[in-house]
Image 1 (cartoon, rainbow, N blue to C red):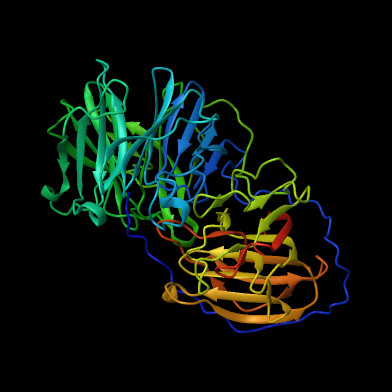
Image 2 (cartoon, one colour; image 1 turned 30 degrees about the vertical axis):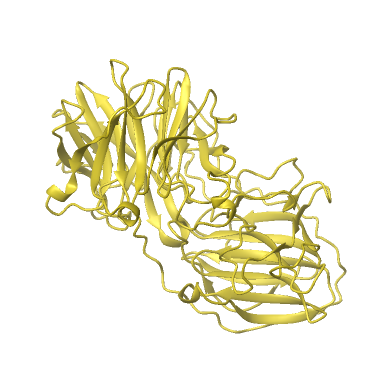
Length: 553
């Protein structure tokens, strides 16, 4: 899994504050939540458009079991981790579970570990069970299992401990012998650009040997950043599908050998070519019940993260696969933007969950914390129909980058608007609650209590100062405890904040803020509440709903 994400240049705020009359009543508007979807890949005419997931589902892997497809992705240090998505046609996906309710070691992930946590995982179905092998580059390779992907998964078992071990994938050979192939992260181990293969124990929890390097791209002129292997077998050949060349400009390679330990020959089977889809690689080969073949992979769009594409895949007469549009039949395809849908059971068009009315017993699956959450951070029962976030003390008064209590979700499409209604009840000086866009840089709009006053505040922290203090860009004194907060995100991740006292007339505040990616992830948007460092939590913010519409303002 490539770790060289490019970041966009920051568009600075224009320091502008506009005010509105303060005579509107403190009432939460009761309009119905928007129903239109932000990004629907199903065109409704038998074709689909890429990406099939316009959200940050990095390093996807997928399998088919019967008529069901299951997809998982990296989740890094966000909690819950290891998202599980379901589809029956490879185009319309629904987030149905997370395999890791909490990250291990639990205490290590009590604070944000940006860029750490769950890197590229692999999912397989064997002996009536679902298996996920996932790496933590700081601790090693883990395995978890379940009889049903929608239900609770087993606790993680450390298969191989050590730093820099990444991207594991299991494989059960025809004789029943299991194997595990993986890559290396140079940042932790000093090793990269090679793939190592081990024999596994029958229960899949232990290695039986020290491993052997089966593909060493340092010996292949011009190759770099070989990683993310997936191991398959077809027609007597062992195939390793692996990305190379880095996230921004890479490609998809395939290796094959008659013996699982090699020697392997290689081909590049998918590359950007003349398309706008940069770095098309890292994913999963799947088939349909009637014998079609498809490949799921990601494309990095910095602030939007690593979005997922679906490519048609064919096996050539020479026994090699090719992906996408291989019009010149040279074996190296280019990504398709629109294509006929897979031959699969009919499935209604779907879009990923975004809005939340907070009237269910649990938060929607789209929400993630920045680290393992603690009891008392959030409540859906304190005010039925609302989400209460406690003002949890910050680790640093200068920045929210080390705050684990940010409750965020992925950017859900190229342009969208988020609106929420906040009722603020501070308990101490410095208590704050509001709406945030978070990445290497971040910005938030909310209410803060200080100097004996309640203020509406817009603040930001540029990515260039991510180790320094945030900047207050605009503020307005108010006696109100209820405010509607909004951020409109237009194409290219340009964000415009606004507020309203009545939920009808919104007033822009500040200028344009350009969101950026985070550490190996896209930008996120969501809610937060905080207290000053070393202050006992006593205040809170009650959020009536969180509504996402597709208009981008």
